[in-house]
Length: 271
Image 1 (cartoon, rainbow, N blue to C red):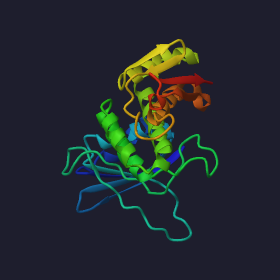
Image 2 (cartoon, helix red, strand yellow; image 1 turned 90 degrees about the vertical axis):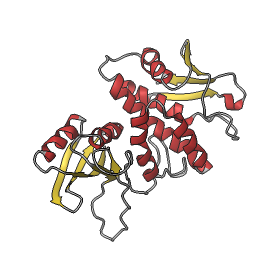
Image 3 (tube, rainbow, N blue to C red; image 1 turned 30 degrees about the vertical axis):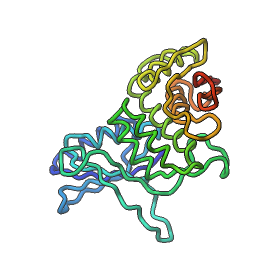
Protein backbone atom coordinates (compact mmCIF):
# COMPACT_ATOMS: atom_id res chain seq x y z
CA UNK A 1 0.00 0.00 0.00
CA UNK A 2 1.17 3.54 -0.75
CA UNK A 3 0.17 6.94 0.61
CA UNK A 4 0.09 9.69 -2.01
CA UNK A 5 -0.76 13.39 -1.86
CA UNK A 6 -2.57 14.89 -4.85
CA UNK A 7 -2.82 18.62 -5.48
CA UNK A 8 -5.53 19.58 -7.95
CA UNK A 9 -6.38 23.00 -9.37
CA UNK A 10 -9.87 23.58 -10.73
CA UNK A 11 -12.06 26.51 -11.75
CA UNK A 12 -15.04 25.03 -9.90
CA UNK A 13 -15.53 24.43 -6.19
CA UNK A 14 -19.03 22.94 -6.09
CA UNK A 15 -18.97 19.18 -6.48
CA UNK A 16 -15.19 18.99 -6.94
CA UNK A 17 -14.42 16.90 -3.85
CA UNK A 18 -17.39 14.60 -4.47
CA UNK A 19 -16.45 13.99 -8.12
CA UNK A 20 -12.77 13.34 -7.50
CA UNK A 21 -13.44 11.37 -4.31
CA UNK A 22 -15.59 9.00 -6.35
CA UNK A 23 -12.69 8.49 -8.78
CA UNK A 24 -10.35 7.75 -5.87
CA UNK A 25 -12.73 5.16 -4.38
CA UNK A 26 -13.56 3.58 -7.75
CA UNK A 27 -9.85 2.87 -8.29
CA UNK A 28 -9.46 1.04 -4.98
CA UNK A 29 -8.05 3.88 -2.87
CA UNK A 30 -9.16 5.39 0.44
CA UNK A 31 -9.36 9.14 0.98
CA UNK A 32 -7.48 9.80 4.24
CA UNK A 33 -7.78 13.59 4.44
CA UNK A 34 -8.46 16.58 2.25
CA UNK A 35 -8.45 20.36 2.30
CA UNK A 36 -9.72 22.94 -0.14
CA UNK A 37 -8.77 26.59 -0.50
CA UNK A 38 -8.97 29.48 -2.92
CA UNK A 39 -5.81 30.81 -4.56
CA UNK A 40 -4.72 32.95 -7.49
CA UNK A 41 -4.61 29.75 -9.57
CA UNK A 42 -8.21 28.86 -8.79
CA UNK A 43 -9.69 26.34 -6.37
CA UNK A 44 -6.96 24.12 -4.91
CA UNK A 45 -7.94 20.70 -3.57
CA UNK A 46 -5.31 18.66 -1.71
CA UNK A 47 -6.12 14.99 -1.08
CA UNK A 48 -4.11 12.34 0.74
CA UNK A 49 -5.07 8.85 -0.40
CA UNK A 50 -3.96 5.30 0.37
CA UNK A 51 -4.17 2.28 -1.92
CA UNK A 52 -2.37 -0.41 -3.92
CA UNK A 53 0.83 0.68 -5.66
CA UNK A 54 -0.02 -1.23 -8.84
CA UNK A 55 -3.22 0.83 -9.27
CA UNK A 56 -1.56 4.22 -8.76
CA UNK A 57 -0.75 4.83 -12.42
CA UNK A 58 -4.37 4.32 -13.47
CA UNK A 59 -5.64 6.61 -10.69
CA UNK A 60 -3.19 9.34 -11.71
CA UNK A 61 -4.36 9.07 -15.30
CA UNK A 62 -8.06 9.30 -14.29
CA UNK A 63 -7.51 12.31 -12.04
CA UNK A 64 -5.14 14.13 -14.38
CA UNK A 65 -7.55 13.86 -17.31
CA UNK A 66 -10.77 14.59 -15.37
CA UNK A 67 -12.81 17.39 -16.95
CA UNK A 68 -12.86 19.38 -13.68
CA UNK A 69 -9.06 19.30 -13.33
CA UNK A 70 -6.97 22.09 -14.82
CA UNK A 71 -3.63 21.01 -13.35
CA UNK A 72 -2.53 18.06 -11.29
CA UNK A 73 0.47 17.15 -9.12
CA UNK A 74 1.26 14.02 -7.14
CA UNK A 75 3.94 13.22 -4.57
CA UNK A 76 4.54 10.45 -2.02
CA UNK A 77 2.97 11.41 1.30
CA UNK A 78 4.83 11.08 4.56
CA UNK A 79 3.77 12.45 7.96
CA UNK A 80 5.79 15.47 9.00
CA UNK A 81 9.12 14.26 10.47
CA UNK A 82 10.38 15.46 13.81
CA UNK A 83 13.33 17.15 12.09
CA UNK A 84 12.66 19.61 9.26
CA UNK A 85 13.28 18.29 5.77
CA UNK A 86 13.39 20.03 2.41
CA UNK A 87 10.22 19.56 0.40
CA UNK A 88 10.50 18.35 -3.21
CA UNK A 89 9.72 20.85 -5.92
CA UNK A 90 6.46 19.88 -7.68
CA UNK A 91 6.23 19.44 -11.42
CA UNK A 92 2.87 20.57 -12.76
CA UNK A 93 0.70 18.48 -15.01
CA UNK A 94 -1.98 20.00 -17.20
CA UNK A 95 -4.60 17.94 -18.99
CA UNK A 96 -5.39 20.50 -21.64
CA UNK A 97 -8.30 22.17 -19.81
CA UNK A 98 -5.98 24.90 -18.55
CA UNK A 99 -2.79 26.51 -19.71
CA UNK A 100 0.46 24.62 -20.07
CA UNK A 101 1.65 21.34 -21.49
CA UNK A 102 0.03 18.01 -20.79
CA UNK A 103 1.57 15.20 -18.94
CA UNK A 104 3.78 15.46 -15.89
CA UNK A 105 3.47 14.24 -12.31
CA UNK A 106 5.79 15.15 -9.45
CA UNK A 107 7.17 12.85 -6.78
CA UNK A 108 9.79 13.11 -4.06
CA UNK A 109 13.32 12.47 -5.20
CA UNK A 110 14.05 10.00 -2.40
CA UNK A 111 15.41 6.84 -4.03
CA UNK A 112 13.56 3.55 -3.58
CA UNK A 113 14.33 0.02 -4.64
CA UNK A 114 11.99 -1.77 -7.06
CA UNK A 115 9.48 -4.30 -5.86
CA UNK A 116 11.23 -7.59 -5.27
CA UNK A 117 14.71 -6.16 -4.65
CA UNK A 118 16.36 -7.87 -1.70
CA UNK A 119 18.77 -6.24 0.72
CA UNK A 120 20.33 -2.80 0.71
CA UNK A 121 23.03 -3.76 -1.82
CA UNK A 122 20.99 -5.86 -4.28
CA UNK A 123 19.98 -3.09 -6.65
CA UNK A 124 20.87 0.52 -7.28
CA UNK A 125 18.38 3.12 -6.01
CA UNK A 126 15.69 4.41 -8.34
CA UNK A 127 15.08 8.11 -8.94
CA UNK A 128 11.43 8.14 -7.87
CA UNK A 129 10.78 11.65 -9.15
CA UNK A 130 11.89 10.77 -12.65
CA UNK A 131 9.88 7.52 -12.70
CA UNK A 132 6.67 9.07 -11.39
CA UNK A 133 6.97 11.91 -13.90
CA UNK A 134 7.33 9.43 -16.76
CA UNK A 135 4.57 6.94 -15.87
CA UNK A 136 1.54 9.15 -16.69
CA UNK A 137 3.18 10.04 -20.00
CA UNK A 138 3.54 6.33 -20.81
CA UNK A 139 -0.12 5.77 -19.93
CA UNK A 140 -1.23 8.48 -22.36
CA UNK A 141 1.08 7.34 -25.17
CA UNK A 142 0.60 3.58 -24.74
CA UNK A 143 1.35 1.46 -26.71
CA UNK A 144 3.72 3.89 -28.48
CA UNK A 145 6.17 4.03 -25.56
CA UNK A 146 9.33 2.20 -26.64
CA UNK A 147 11.14 5.25 -28.00
CA UNK A 148 10.65 7.04 -24.67
CA UNK A 149 11.97 4.04 -22.78
CA UNK A 150 15.01 3.59 -25.00
CA UNK A 151 15.81 7.28 -24.57
CA UNK A 152 15.49 6.91 -20.80
CA UNK A 153 17.74 3.84 -20.83
CA UNK A 154 20.49 5.78 -22.61
CA UNK A 155 20.30 8.61 -20.08
CA UNK A 156 20.32 6.48 -16.92
CA UNK A 157 23.56 5.69 -15.10
CA UNK A 158 24.51 2.05 -15.88
CA UNK A 159 24.03 1.02 -12.25
CA UNK A 160 20.39 2.18 -12.30
CA UNK A 161 19.26 0.80 -15.66
CA UNK A 162 18.11 -2.68 -14.70
CA UNK A 163 16.34 -1.69 -11.49
CA UNK A 164 14.65 1.37 -13.00
CA UNK A 165 13.44 -0.25 -16.22
CA UNK A 166 12.21 -3.37 -14.44
CA UNK A 167 10.28 -1.24 -11.95
CA UNK A 168 8.69 0.84 -14.73
CA UNK A 169 7.84 -2.38 -16.57
CA UNK A 170 6.15 -3.81 -13.48
CA UNK A 171 4.05 -0.68 -13.05
CA UNK A 172 3.04 -0.56 -16.72
CA UNK A 173 2.28 -4.30 -16.78
CA UNK A 174 0.07 -4.05 -13.68
CA UNK A 175 -1.77 -1.10 -15.25
CA UNK A 176 -2.34 -2.93 -18.55
CA UNK A 177 -3.57 -6.01 -16.67
CA UNK A 178 -6.13 -3.97 -14.70
CA UNK A 179 -7.22 -2.09 -17.82
CA UNK A 180 -7.54 -5.00 -20.23
CA UNK A 181 -7.58 -8.34 -18.41
CA UNK A 182 -8.73 -7.99 -14.79
CA UNK A 183 -12.33 -9.04 -15.51
CA UNK A 184 -11.27 -12.51 -16.68
CA UNK A 185 -11.24 -15.61 -14.51
CA UNK A 186 -8.33 -17.16 -12.67
CA UNK A 187 -6.03 -19.06 -15.04
CA UNK A 188 -3.12 -21.50 -14.69
CA UNK A 189 0.25 -19.87 -15.34
CA UNK A 190 0.64 -21.33 -18.85
CA UNK A 191 -2.81 -20.00 -19.85
CA UNK A 192 -2.03 -16.60 -18.31
CA UNK A 193 1.09 -16.38 -20.47
CA UNK A 194 -0.88 -17.31 -23.59
CA UNK A 195 -4.01 -15.23 -22.99
CA UNK A 196 -2.61 -12.21 -21.12
CA UNK A 197 1.16 -11.82 -21.50
CA UNK A 198 1.37 -12.69 -25.19
CA UNK A 199 -1.43 -10.35 -26.43
CA UNK A 200 -0.08 -7.51 -24.28
CA UNK A 201 3.47 -7.98 -25.58
CA UNK A 202 2.21 -8.01 -29.17
CA UNK A 203 1.02 -4.42 -28.71
CA UNK A 204 4.67 -3.43 -28.32
CA UNK A 205 6.94 -5.96 -30.06
CA UNK A 206 6.93 -9.01 -32.32
CA UNK A 207 6.20 -11.79 -29.84
CA UNK A 208 5.35 -15.46 -30.24
CA UNK A 209 4.89 -18.40 -27.90
CA UNK A 210 6.70 -21.74 -28.27
CA UNK A 211 5.42 -24.19 -25.69
CA UNK A 212 5.88 -22.21 -22.46
CA UNK A 213 8.59 -19.84 -23.74
CA UNK A 214 7.74 -16.35 -24.98
CA UNK A 215 10.08 -15.16 -27.74
CA UNK A 216 10.60 -11.55 -28.84
CA UNK A 217 12.33 -10.87 -32.16
CA UNK A 218 12.68 -7.10 -32.17
CA UNK A 219 13.37 -5.90 -28.65
CA UNK A 220 14.67 -2.32 -28.95
CA UNK A 221 16.79 -2.70 -25.81
CA UNK A 222 19.39 -5.02 -27.35
CA UNK A 223 22.88 -4.09 -28.53
CA UNK A 224 23.38 -1.18 -26.13
CA UNK A 225 27.07 -1.90 -25.65
CA UNK A 226 26.61 -3.86 -22.44
CA UNK A 227 27.11 -7.56 -21.76
CA UNK A 228 24.34 -9.88 -20.67
CA UNK A 229 20.57 -9.82 -20.98
CA UNK A 230 19.22 -6.29 -21.27
CA UNK A 231 15.43 -6.41 -21.87
CA UNK A 232 14.71 -5.28 -18.32
CA UNK A 233 11.54 -3.34 -19.15
CA UNK A 234 9.99 -6.28 -21.01
CA UNK A 235 10.87 -8.64 -18.18
CA UNK A 236 9.34 -6.27 -15.62
CA UNK A 237 6.21 -5.77 -17.70
CA UNK A 238 5.68 -9.52 -18.05
CA UNK A 239 5.95 -9.81 -14.28
CA UNK A 240 3.45 -7.00 -13.75
CA UNK A 241 0.98 -8.58 -16.18
CA UNK A 242 1.16 -11.98 -14.51
CA UNK A 243 1.17 -10.82 -10.90
CA UNK A 244 -2.46 -9.78 -11.36
CA UNK A 245 -3.28 -13.48 -11.68
CA UNK A 246 -0.58 -15.15 -9.61
CA UNK A 247 0.66 -12.56 -7.11
CA UNK A 248 4.32 -11.85 -6.41
CA UNK A 249 5.19 -15.56 -6.61
CA UNK A 250 5.51 -15.52 -10.41
CA UNK A 251 9.14 -15.37 -11.57
CA UNK A 252 10.15 -14.19 -15.06
CA UNK A 253 13.60 -15.03 -16.42
CA UNK A 254 15.17 -13.77 -19.65
CA UNK A 255 16.98 -16.99 -20.49
CA UNK A 256 18.39 -15.78 -23.83
CA UNK A 257 18.87 -12.33 -25.32
CA UNK A 258 19.84 -11.01 -28.75
CA UNK A 259 22.31 -8.81 -26.89
CA UNK A 260 24.33 -11.97 -26.15
CA UNK A 261 24.08 -13.31 -29.71
CA UNK A 262 20.83 -15.30 -29.51
CA UNK A 263 18.39 -15.20 -32.41
CA UNK A 264 15.52 -14.07 -30.19
CA UNK A 265 15.02 -12.87 -26.64
CA UNK A 266 13.45 -15.72 -24.64
CA UNK A 267 11.38 -15.30 -21.48
CA UNK A 268 10.52 -18.23 -19.24
CA UNK A 269 8.05 -18.31 -16.34
CA UNK A 270 7.96 -20.04 -12.97
CA UNK A 271 5.56 -19.83 -10.04
